[in-house]
Length: 603
Image (cartoon, rainbow, N blue to C red):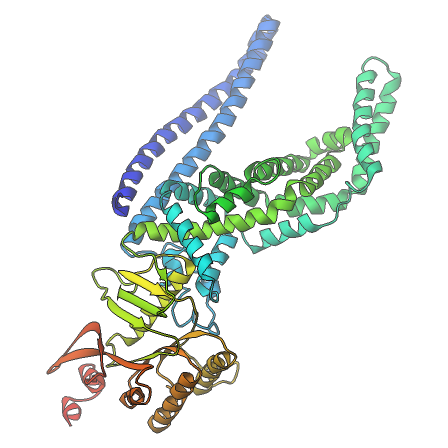
């Protein structure tokens, strides 16, 4: 399989050549369009006065070529825009391979300090796992990806299904890039979806009134017939004017409602065009695996495909926009009851393809989120797909944190054999305890999302995560740091008491109180967690807490991160070892920063 960096460089080179060629075509079409437009005037002013038939023929030819050039220019401009979007994507991915992912959306709106684990693990926001992986191009896809990272436990079968889908899409990098390029033309939002959903659910007005449908069908025919007869028979001239004004009057009676509907829907036109392109891109591929196959089946329910259905809605709304031209609107309304014709066509769309719209958006979101996970898997093909374990809660070999670059990352083996086991990790400041806790959690989150993980092997049992690492006080809630910590600890214990299976990750217990209180309270809290069959990891500086291993030898295990101190130098290897740490470094670090003197340190 071609290495990601080589693939992106090769593709970028091809796309840049295509872009140059397409720019030339677009420039030539602009010149051709100008020349054909200018050629119309000599036909009108010079040829027609001298040779009528030839002038009319040349005029028709010039106008036809001008219209063709406009259509061709639009088509090739769209292609150029798509190619330029693909160029941008490949440049972004080459940066991402070097761990520069600042160009991707960070998902700040998903930051939630009350969430069981997402805030502690930096799942969202600048520099987050979400920003690292997110390549979504739709509002609903972005929400679904965030949901996969922050949701409660999924069944094992769902995780394995998603893994198969991610693996399948990893083999289609060009399809994913085409999808992302199509999605880059416009930004959709929650309001767009809410309004479209609401519109589809609204009751029908015109389709439920047979008399109105008959009137809209017959009256324009009568009006056009009277106008045609008026050319020959003067008697029909007055009648044709009456019919014309009658149609304007009928349209005027519904003007407020139709204007409201038009304004509401026309603002969603660009979003619908985006959905049309995205769905069309999805429909082009042949998929394997249950999840991807079901996506394709959903897109082709009914008599026509999802993309074709959205395209027909776009055409109706584009036609509806003709009412914005006052002169055109007067003739269209007076001759054809244009507003009512469009409203009927919209209601027929709602009654037909419209009933599948929500399903199409749901599968679009699913594909969008899976495409992000597949891009991540493609970029880091050395990663491992987890296996579902029936025995161990977690058994990982050479597990590391994916957000740490390869040349800086230190990986460790780690396992928790059974439910109710707890690992206590001791170590000096900056020895790597907190980073390791996040390493375990991030890989568990990726595994449950169906993505590959940063490990040589990774067996796990799907389980809900709950962490307490970054508790903060709140002025608005009149809540101290210590109280906030206790409240989170109580939430954790309550869920265990209710019978939930939790994988618990703690960075110290009772950080907000003094040493004597902390030691007694921490021991009591840990014992309570063990009584309730809690499973997880606790990192601590409190070496006394490690003595609990003596009381629970079959359930508690001590591990540590050690440091090397050579006079005034401290070195870290970030390797996880068995046992309790023997070295601390707080005073030495304070001396190195000039907070205390060397004399105070040695005393």
